[in-house]
Length: 173
Figure 1 (cartoon, rainbow, N blue to C red):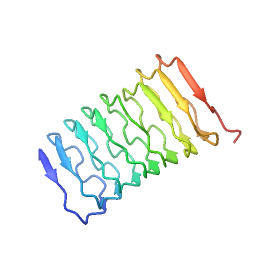
Figure 2: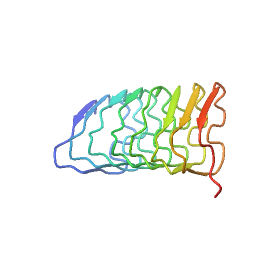
Figure 3: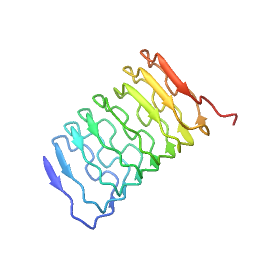
């Protein structure tokens, strides 16, 4: 499969639906989609860009893990959670704007991506272990929320270019 357009009315992309579809380069999602399931696009090595509809509220575990060519993804403002390893290993993902209403970033969500600048929105209240570790190009982090629980360690581990950090840094919990 190289290209696919999913029908309107579909609300959930099942876990593993396109797992390891190595030749998938283009996908069109309907406005009715609200969630992307576990490993739905994991290992789609040639997928470069995907437009997520505004209706998306959750991206689950490993949804785009190891999409090595993924360089551009829009994250709609109503996404509330980004699952464990959702973008882990997206080696070309450089630019990302986290959703305005995002509340939870699970462990290893963006581990190993090429993000350069990161702004954590005001509504984020949880960041899991190693969420942004191995982001070797990460230079700047700004945290707008003042009520975050950091669960674990090494949130920015091996981010060797990180030279600017602004905002809240840890909870007492």
